[in-house]
Image (cartoon, rainbow, N blue to C red; front, side):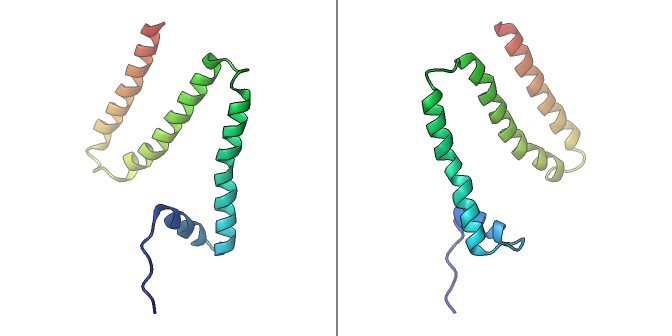
Length: 108
């Protein structure tokens, strides 16, 4: 039996999708479909670039970045630290959000 090649990020993604019972073909098709949305979004954005106001798009982009950051941070905050560290980390997270709000309020 041949040794398996190392799991690259793309292979790990495919392996995760096949673990709940997806066939490799279905996982590859899903990967292709979800990846192709990047191209469609890029074309759509390029087409609308001259018609949209940046002041409207900037909060949407900021919201997406905040969502990505929270999606990675909150599960770690719940599972990784020891119980006595959780209040400190939660307070630090809340302080960061308050600092962002104060900075935004002072900028206007």
